Structures are given as structure tokens and as C-alpha cells.
Image (cartoon, rainbow, N blue to C red):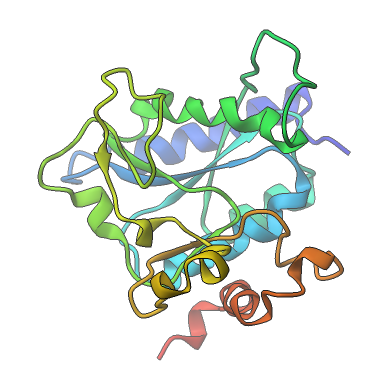
Length: 232
């Protein structure tokens, strides 16, 4: 059931607005940096929770803002995200004008909505977008503290940079789980910063696509079950 009725949107907007004003616009804060992710349905809530817990486990100094489409998550899901200390930013979906059914995977219909990250200038001066099916293995705050201050940086070349000259980040910031099979010489968990669980999701244990990724999926499970009080 969708909890974003008119009254809920107003209340949520007020609460979020107050928090943004206190956190991001506090004159005592030197920087306004944030991690961003996107939630377009309840199915990815476990992934989002694992992401935020992995960021906290890695002792990040910056908050996670979850962009959430207005019809995407139940009230229970929203509350579980807020309970993790994340911020919710209601947004509208962004879709292509051409045939939306002509896609390799149905889930790619939401890919354009990720571009809303470029509109978050009212809450942060610099942000890093991470998919909700990622986890952080080691602290990655350096991405928000790059000395050359690029306008756009990506772990893989992307055509959405207007200048077509993004700063290229190494694969350790977006290590697809499939690299462990296709490029085993690159798979070093002491160096990998972020694992990206493309295709079969580790929280869908019955998915046959997970059969060959038990060890890597255990890393996700450890992130998902991590709690603040378990820190050494």
C-alpha cells in the first residue's frame, strides 16, 4: 500500500525540509557532502539497508540520502530506512519518451531517474551516487574529497557527462560481482572498495543465479546483519 498520500507527502516534506536545513545548511559545517541512492520499489529495500550499514561499518563521515519515487515504497519500508538514519528525498520518476518496453531488462526503466542526482544541489555541494545493490567493504570517503574537484567522475565511462570528459575512477569503486569469475586476477577483497551485486540479488536466496556466488553473497549478508554496537 502506498503511503504517499497528499497529507503524508506534506508531512514528509516538512520533516525532510527541517532536517536538510539543520544538517546541510548549518553554517558551522565546512562541507555539504552526501552519498545518494535510489529506491523505486520495495524489492530493493534490503539492498538499501545493507548499503547504509556497510557505509556506517566503514566509518563514513557523510550521510546517505535515498531518493525515493512517490509511488515506490510502503510505509513500513520508509520507516525502516529512516530508522537507519538515512534521509528520504521524494522525487518524480524520469522516463524516456520512446517505447519503454524495448529494454534489455525491465528494471532499466528506472535508470533515467538516477539522473535526478544532478538536481540535489539544494542539499549538497558534492555527492556520490551508489546503486542500492552495492555494499562498501572499505571506507570510500576519499571520493567526496577528491582534490581535483571534478564536475563528474565515474568508475566506468558514461555518456551522461555533458563535457564527455569524466574523471575515471578505478574498478575497485564498482567491482561487479561477476568480475570474480570473468577477471579473477582482479578480485582482491583487501583492495576492492565497493561490490556491485548485479543480476541475481543476494537477498533473493532462491534465485538460481546466486548458485555460484555463495562466498561473495556472504559479504553482503554480513553487511546486512551488521549493527552499530557490533563494531570493535
